[in-house]
Image 1 (cartoon, rainbow, N blue to C red):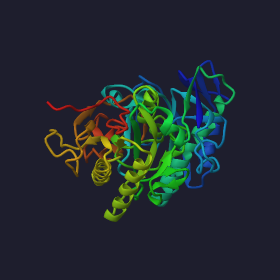
Image 2 (tube, one colour; image 1 turned 180 degrees about the horizontal axis):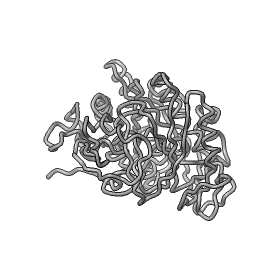
Image 3 (cartoon, rainbow, N blue to C red; image 1 turned 30 degrees about the vertical axis):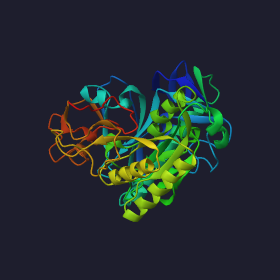
Image 4 (cartoon, one colour; image 1 turned 90 degrees about the vertical axis):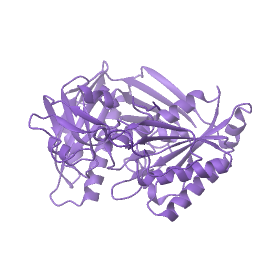
Length: 428
């Protein structure tokens, strides 16, 4: 698999009579976007707004963040199995509108949604405050069941991102990054003197709108499987969950996973990155045992000597994380875990719901229970009252002046377990 990502730098988003990229500006036909969203009969109405870095804007409650892209060469299309037909992606060329994003917001789907502040202290906790965001506010038909509500909002964001991506199809990229991953037998033999490292990518899949989609398939229905790193980078995995905002992997996170990018950057230098094993996070003990056994077996089949395991979410998935770690270590595969902590507001409580003595190398993305204060913004896109019910908030979190007192977990991406944030933790 050889993937070229042609990055088109977007410095601003503006409304215009037609959708196009012009001089680093993404011009957007607002009526066309609203029309795409409202084609879905489950959505009663939609509106489109722009939120730029540094503007005093609060977006709440956020469902997903997606980077606009278009497939210009190679097999498959954008978001296969959901927007495009099911074909393997990860090769050819994809153009990326770098610096722009689609953000979906509206009437709350599940209580675990989040906040993006474009300015003020909250902006420092989320990577999405640095993007030029096209915000799609969607209101569902009255009485729509929660699962249908989630599906409608999810597809609306993906379709709009694909539509905007088309504007970059014939634009010459500002830079082109090339990633090449060999077939497994060749990959394993490529650098005989370097340690072989695999990545175990845990996907949220507990159900009740705690879902992730792989080529359009709900990840709780899969067994752990191998993927080329470039497949993940090319839109094969999308978010479909409504978990706590701070550590959910939005679709943007999957498209730009820093773990995969960093492993590829070090491939051939000090490691041999042999592949990605995707696995799910389950509810029952038997399912957890099955998936962790399959995941560790696949890593062993890759011949890996080391593995990085990243979690999504907290609590119940902590058991999956520890099972994956223990079974890898028992196979002689040295393992590093990426997680965050729910250690109480004073940081003194047990950080994870499960533990194992074999988990001796753990990277923390921060404590999601830390208290924060967000000042009022001049403009709010969405429903500010959601601050009183989203995870990390409480009845009374939203003050009369528009300020919010809450836990860090209300901010989208604040303690992301792929390391897509600025926080970390260290022993004092």
